[in-house]
Image: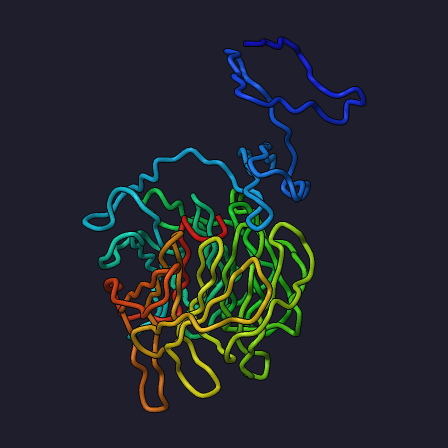
Length: 389
């Protein structure tokens, strides 16, 4: 057994160090300091397993390969506070925020544990009643922004909750403008959201989820902007999907952004059919888009993409329980959950309290998960286990 005792180990030019191979034991009772830097300075195409300290998130992270990129290391036992029955103990938690039902909008935040089946339970309240918000999340924090309040009063307020403990939302900051009918996606560090439909614009903004404060400009979408769109993400890449333009034409295109790089969106591919008002969710590799409305009416079709590979969406091979729109969705690494919705006809609106689930890694129809506390549409959802984390 050999032993090396040095204060500093580097090559002759101080530009790197030697490779230590074989079975090597680090036995110091003190510590070692890995390289560090902010999110923007993450190196690319590193050997898998490379380790660094992220000064933005204050967490260690390691490189999981060119497809997935950098992933944060977080010590946790996945214990979640509050809840009864199926919503106690361990698992990925999905929060379902606000919404519009019969007779009015609501400020209630509900939650379910995605790995189980069962009805939602009360988590806490938003600062006020809201529907058609956008939502995103880290492993610890749920963030909801904007939305309508009856009768069509807009807000620019951003609110947040902590996943692990039940409680009311707190103020996070403000968006640059009031908006609704927008959407958001995130990785562990950053949330990015669209402008929405009030009016339609191509502006993208972002927040740093671990801190509080106002949103700032991110970049622009590929076109004039969209409302009623949906999204999904991996740890590095975000997709904004479908929606309607300022003239209410249904959109088929999928925009791609690199979440930690402030650059304009680029084209990723197209949906099978133009669609809006759908649910988008993902694990780290596959994104699913469920239900919604097409130019030909309501749909229950589910489409899929491989997030790391640019290309058109394909049929997932299963359908949701019914054809409706204004649903919201969230995911764990294996399961997607779809909450609420409405099937609105010229004569009447039918609101749903149904919660459905699909297994992301295998095709098949959605099945019943449980029920919401009320019949709702226009909710905003996110989880502490989605593909961006």
